[in-house]
Image (tube, rainbow, N blue to C red):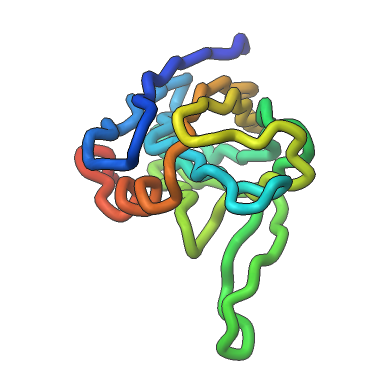
Length: 161
């Protein structure tokens, strides 16, 4: 299946409440919403968040993620171990029919490591999500402040399923 590219407009400047929600990307039975990347606090490590909704009758699996920031992109989750929050690498994410995979701060996320191009607020990242059935889905993901990303993901608006 061919890739789909979706462009996002992002305003530059000081963080405020004017950031619009990213549009819904639909490919096959999948919908991708709320795709954001906070500007990394460290020079070579970052994160990526988005939501995948499987509207099909078959399970789907997110198997890999690539970004234009270079380095590696791996699937992680935050979990509490002995009362302490820890980040653990995880394998591919399976998404049951009519289910949702939500990547958000404090939970599942994509960890960007050894990035060679540090994205800044106002930039966009080219992202490729690879799924077992659907194939590759290409996105352009806005880079926002961590505060703006967290605010947008805490209030899913019309995208909540």
